[in-house]
Amino acid sequence: MNIRIILLNFSILSLFTVFHANAQRFVRGKFDPRWKTDTTKTIVNLREFKSLMPRDGFEVFNNPGFIGSEEALNFYFKFEPVIAIVIEGEARAYPLNVLTFHEIANDVINGVPIAVTFCPLCNAGIVYDRRFKYNGNEYVFDFGVSGMLRKSDMVMWDKQTETWWQQLTGEGLVGELSGEMLTFLPSLIISVDEFFTSYPEGKIMLSHRKDKYGQTYGSNPYHNYDSIGNQGSHFFDGEIDDRLPAMERIVDIENGGAYKIYPFKEIRKRKVINDDFKGKQIVIFYAGKTVSVLDKENIEDSRHIGTVTVFSSIVDGERLSFKKKKRNFSDLETGSVWDITGKCLEGTYKGKQLVMEVHSNHFAFAWLAFHPDSEIYE
Image (cartoon, rainbow, N blue to C red; front, side, top):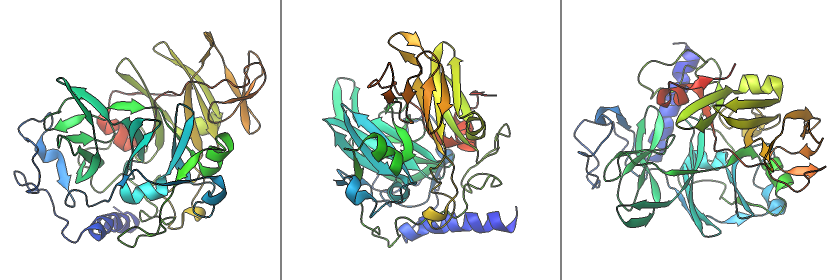
C-alpha cells in the first residue's frame, strides 16, 4: 500500500473519531448498552459489523428547513451534487456535501415520510419510504445512524423497533425485522444547477455553515478518497471484486431480483445508453458538469464526474430510442427534446415526464460486495 493511500485511510479513521471522543471497535458479544435490539434475530454473522462510534454519533436531520433558488447559491456551489426527489409535483434537493456529515435526513413530502440517506464510503445515495407494515402493525420509522459499518456501508437503525438496516440494500439485518426490506423511492443525483433548471420552484435543504463538531460544509473530509487508484475503504473486509476498479462509479438497475450495473466510464463515452435488461427497456442519460464531493478538500475545486440518470424508455406504450443533442437529448422517433431529469422540453411529447427507474450511484467495490452476481454492461 503506497503512502498516499495510507494517509488517506488514516484521515478517514480520524474523521470518525472527530465525531465522538469515545469511538470504539466492535467486540463480539459486547454492544452499546443502550441497544434493545434482539441480536439473536439476525440474517448475518455479527462479526461482520464494525462499531466506530456510539449510535447517533452522526446527528441526522429531522424535518429540515428548505430554501429556494434565489438563496441557494449563497450556500451551495452550482455544480455540486444533490439527491433530488419529486413527490406529487413537489421537488426537493438534499446536498451530498451536507449529508456527508449527517448521512440521513428524515423528512415528509406531500404527506409521504421519506429517509434520504448517503454513505460517503460507498458513495451510496438512496431514498427510502419510512412507512412500513409488519404483522398487522403500521410504522413510520425515524432512522438514525447506528455507528456501525458492514462491508464499509453504513448500518442504519429505526427508533421504533431498533432493527439494524443495511443502507445500500434496504435489508433488515438484526432485530425484530431482520430479513425484511425497505421500499426504495426513485430519486436522481444531479447538480444544484440541474435541479433548479428543471424544477425552478423546487426547494433545497438549508444547513448552517458548520455542523456541531465544527466541520465546514462545502469542504471534503475524505480528501482524494475517490481516486481511481484507491483500493476501496480501510473498513472493508474481504476480497475486492477485480472486474472493475474499486472506485469506479456505477449505476444500477434491477428487474425481477436480478441486477445490472453500468460503469460511468462507459456511460461517459456514449452519453446515452439505450438498453433492454431481461425485458425492461431503459435509457441512461449523461451530462458532464457535476463534481465529486469526495475529491479535493474544497468541493468547488473537485473534478467533474458528470450526472447519470436512468428512466424507462416507454412513453404512451411505445418504446423510444434516444441520442445526445447538444446540452439535452432527443428521441429518434419524433425528435422531441428531453432534459437530464427526463422532462420533455419541446416536440410531440412536450410536457411529458419519463418514468424514473429506481437506481443510485455507487463505488464498484461496495456494490459488488452486496450483489456479486450483477451483470456488468459492456
